[in-house]
Length: 315
Image (cartoon, rainbow, N blue to C red):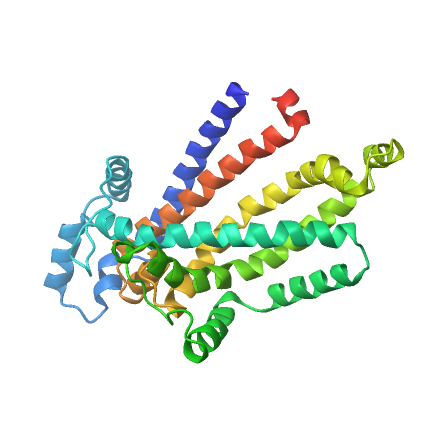
């Protein structure tokens, strides 16, 4: 098992290196002159030259890439051109919103999908199964930002139960911060919960038809015990894999949802940096999002190995 973990860690490091190289090439090499992109084509030549010198763009591309990676390893993400402050400070402030939002969305998505998927499979072709299928179809069809707008109109504007946007900060207390994140988290979780429900239902149906489940029922094990002891643990293996892959959709959806609810998170920072053509911030945030997705998929891969004894024996 230890050798398997070390092998996965080595693969993770190689993937991160290639991802960082791709980000650097796309944002700093292929566009041509990054200074002209940030300041615009109407900028004066002396202003462009000053920015090139400030950002080190007058150095060779290989030197800039090595300097960027070296700075990342030491926690130096560079200086934002727009905000005139270290990117690490911006990221640390915004991560306090995006990370709890994503974790809450994952928790809501899992809490909805697993019981609904198992219940639909256990009562196949019944009213519960049909209702779950309708829910999953709606979740897949409706985008998360549109759900967020509907939530604002109904729960905030009409009922006044939740704030329509903004974030009071964690200093204001846990409950006000939770209220500000709940509607965005549900809007972010709803489409992914629909997908995960369908996967859970399919995986549960496949396990229910397995020989060992029929054997357990033939030995007198009741239906609920069979589901709890035999069906659900085996159905969780493909579900865990899909849940890890969905993390990229949670982070991607956070960009839209944070803008709908005016949340000061990493997604909104990425959107603002893109509008302001702050390539320093964009480059770091894209790498952070990519790194988070890769690390979580690594953890899911290890969890998949723990859940499946066949992979443990191969490892």
